[in-house]
Image 1 (cartoon, rainbow, N blue to C red):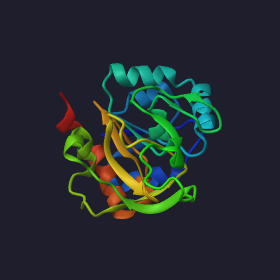
Image 2: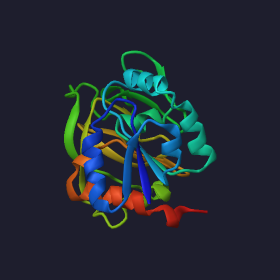
Image 3: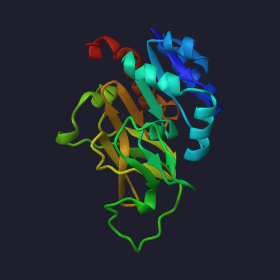
Image 4: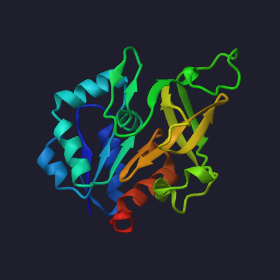
Length: 220
């Protein structure tokens, strides 16, 4: 199993790489499209403002990679802003188009629909350990990421923007200051998590291991 971490100059790639080594997979960090397409699975990390991250992604010439990932049906996991890039757009600082592979728009946490108390001031960013919550309507392949992980497990979040929990591609949501937001999403072999599994202790490592090992289960 060869797992590629997409390097376009953003994110703590060393932390993620170090988390993958104990899983017994061959991990590479690269921006070379040919090397990445030679991998069995890919991880799209991201840290920082959406517009800056998308600009770096485009400057690295990774549009071709995005197309080939879909055509070749390569499983891909987006992490934090890497997950957000999979959606349609973000209004962080300025309206910026995403990759449009998942349905939904990225907005500031306190702008999300369904906020229970509009008068309560929300501390931004959200830096906390939170549970992820699934509903019957959201049970689909994305749950494979959470196989054999306790429903009470908490994961490490640090973000100011998010996608609505009502997105049709949402698998699970978390709640911060009474605000529900998308914590995990998927469509076909595209997966995304808003939290950082590489910083989430044993539960995060278990999730990364599930992604690394889920290939045979999900291959058609």
